[in-house]
Length: 127
Length: 191
Ligand SMILES: [Zn+2]
Image (cartoon, rainbow over all chains, first blue to last red; front, side):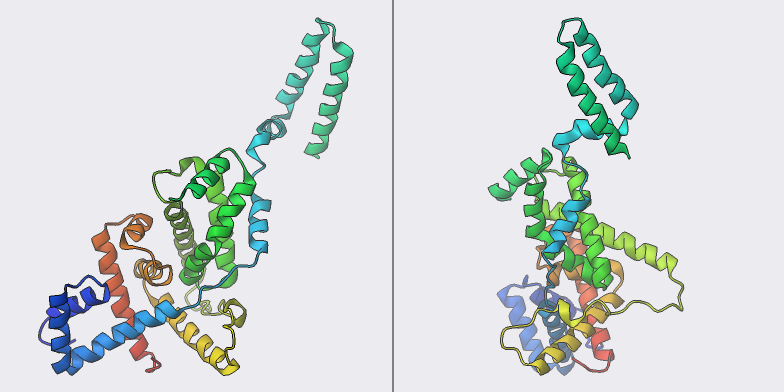
């Protein structure tokens, strides 16, 4: 811009940012009335911002949310199962240790069934 | 931040994926808008948006609940977009076709009720022109312009998302705006 002063450029920015005082706004418009160069410049800036504001907001399909959910790590409330699949040996030991210790207090049969089920299910998870 | 959102985030912290789904629904289009205008391609923007939400979920414990959730989320999305642009710049040779506005098909533009087909085409052409001009901006100006004019965020929010002082945000908006003006005028007086 070859208009004598940068002053009007910063005024234009203030007005466009809606941060100008009433006085500043009047000073700018008084200048625009007599300076073609600044008037064109200001109008071009305004047009540019209006075009930006008019850009449509694209919408994602409803399937987006489902796709995100499908990719989330397993529910944290099932953390034990997740831990188990990462440390299969430790889990096996842990799961065996439970009925082993229960042998001594005499509830062997009941827990053997449960741990057996857990082990089968776990090896299924690994494959 | 409103109470409902606070409650949702509390549930998400405990691993409630249904609560997280509500947050995704709430913010997906804003996140997509930021990514799309940053990278200029629908498919890539959708992938980046997905990644942003997955990251937010995995790292929800790092979210500072004193701040707006959207600010944190948009920051994740803008960082991913910028990383993506850097990667693309490094991977794509200069003479390869630079993806332009191919992402902005008619499908991504919602038809207005009662809009004539001709108007729709004109609008599409205008959109493509504006998107092309946005893409010409250096990244730091582009992001400030997108957050301000497309997402309509406050200077304070933009400064938190971009992690720069409010004064710097203003300067970037001014420079970006001036560059857009100049390029649009030089770009064939289409404005
Ligand atoms: Zn002047």
